[in-house]
Image 1 (spheres, rainbow, N blue to C red):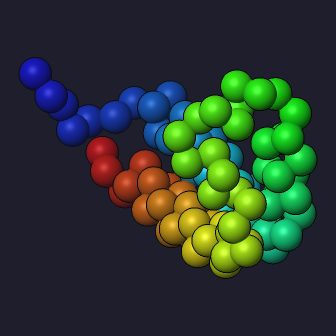
Image 2 (tube, rainbow, N blue to C red):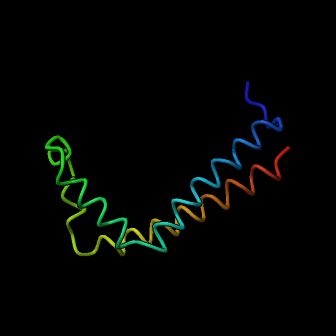
Length: 89
């Protein structure tokens, strides 16, 4: 049976997750070129990474723009998670 009540521990874990997700979002918005450079560097190392489906997407020139957009989505998701964690009882 599903319950809408949350304990303080669950709320605090949700807030910790919101901070982590928000940190990833802020990093993607603030430093998209650095994040893409890391992904491109990591893509060249192991061969099994290169064989994954859609692995070549990190080599596209529009990847920093995509990282910024996804960073905004991550920040909004973190705000939503923090709001839900603090308002639901």
